[in-house]
Length: 195
Image 1 (cartoon, rainbow, N blue to C red):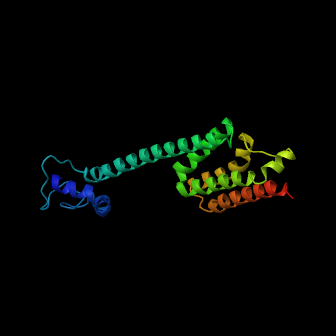
Image 2 (cartoon, helix red, strand yellow):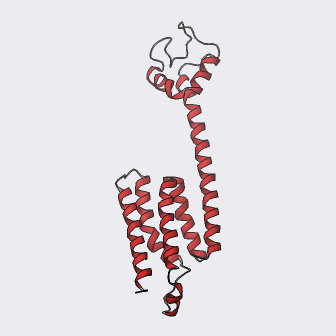
Image 3 (cartoon, one colour):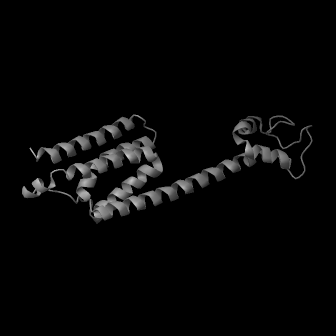
């Protein structure tokens, strides 16, 4: 394959990859064939290698994107874990469990999934601090939660998110609904003790 044509393919993979797959070794001089423009073999080329060369850039790009997503996910989750630890909203086990859940959501599902679950967490922390003195007087204040709370509120949404990862798109409704149910339960329990 001529060097200049290879460069064009690498820059415009989406345009030419279909031609490589469909026309590979089908006719002399075709795009996927290892021959030149006029049906003559290109110097240093082997028959049947056109499509393999075209797929190399995509693999490299996918690997790089995966590594970047992994690095960003770890970085974001570590920052969130430190903030949660400093706020003393969760104990050590709770921070660890929520970090694992957050990483799964961020890496495999994306920011939108994480933001939805994180919004539940933030709202839960805020509502638990409403009327804190009154709750302390009744000995019902719960400012630092643990592993049991994290699993009770986060395990079902994570299971639905895993189903979404495996292609069950209907599970998105379950993910959103389970977070909504956990939020309403937290609000009712935290505000109900004040009445």
